[in-house]
View 1 (cartoon, one colour):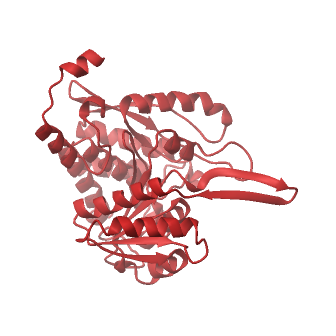
View 2: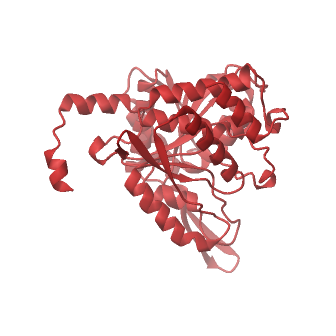
View 3: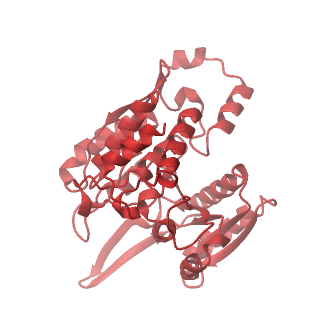
Length: 369
């Protein structure tokens, strides 16, 4: 392996070209980047629980119709049983090989049971930046118009650190971890994202008025990073005020950066503003790996198996994945087909007020390719 890498001659100019083309994802050379053999990329696919199998089937059907040069290694991992732990290790090994994954949402038991496979996967691979884009789709009824903001969420610490213990019967201590290096990393990611995507402002979301040390460190570190980007405006906002501002005047937001728990809450508010979780794509980026999944993380077990799920969020997440792989023509083709299906043809699943099935929606997208 090392001999093969040594024989590769990659100029600085070529590397710079690839890094600028790849959208805010893994920033390593292609020799250790996404795996491509004979012009075809291999991607790890984890459909997830609930509607995951149905939406993943929709993506695969669309990819086949569009002749996308991607083959999937599929792992039917489930959060409903801890027996999936061995399969989890196999899926992680596949992600380490392929560097890129597409996944649905895995169920996490409430109160008892194993810890979240979703969180464990992000921590294991150090996939630290969650990106969810909340934007109005023409023709879809929403509470507000002209909504277009990006939520950037730190994925690996905060309240999701999982450090809890019972210090005395009836007394539980749950630790929130905020560190300067990881805060600086996510802050720099947010400002870099704004710079590369022609965004004008970054809002730092916090609760430093109460958690003066933890959120105070997050806020002060983000402010210090902001000063390195004089062309990007920035402000900060307390998280509860952020929630009110989102539902009253969401147009004021552009890029938002925040710790883990706040990002979970804000992404759900964002989904509600533009029509629901079925149309919000998302991605998770790290230094070496990237996983693409719906931006508003819902299992939707209540509609599992009914063929009524909206596959748009996973299809649009796969579009983000294709751009990460620099398959931009295929990405544009599929994204335009989804938008035409929703906005022009009016083909919609029940969550958007329509009556079409998952299968019918998928066929309509393929017609629009």
